[in-house]
Length: 181
Image (cartoon, rainbow, N blue to C red; front, side, top):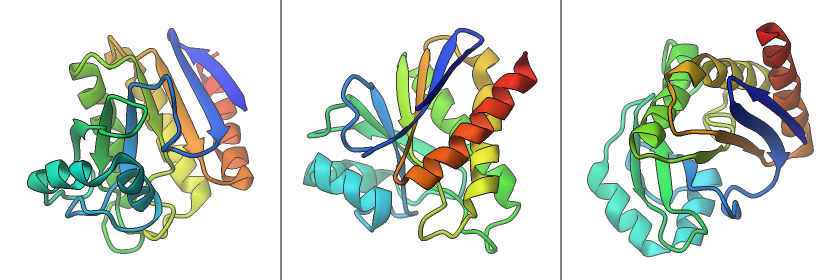
């Protein structure tokens, strides 16, 4: 686990299950445009949260790449789910800007709602095909560059599915931290 504090915000990279983030106020769903159950992160979050999540979130659809919306978390151990539609790599362009918008918009929603802690998955790197290294670089750099605009968010956790994904995110976080020093 990598953990750093930048501008008063604690940022961590952990390997784990995004649906089992106790003590975190909001988890981020790597959603599909219709905000339906789907597979991957969206499937896991919807399954853990129960059917009420899809009932609420589907009313907020459709999303465009880069957009984010917030719902209650229902049976998850969190208060909120922030749903982001990441870009499909090679189709939704400019992919890096759209991916950055996901993280930026999720953080803005969290801050507006007074949320102090948020957990992100690796958005767009599953079925949407975004390569892990550039996705991690965009994610970490966007989060770090957004810190000055946050007033309530004090803890950001990147919850990665595999050890290899965690390693990639940790390297990106260490690079961003050294760039800040």
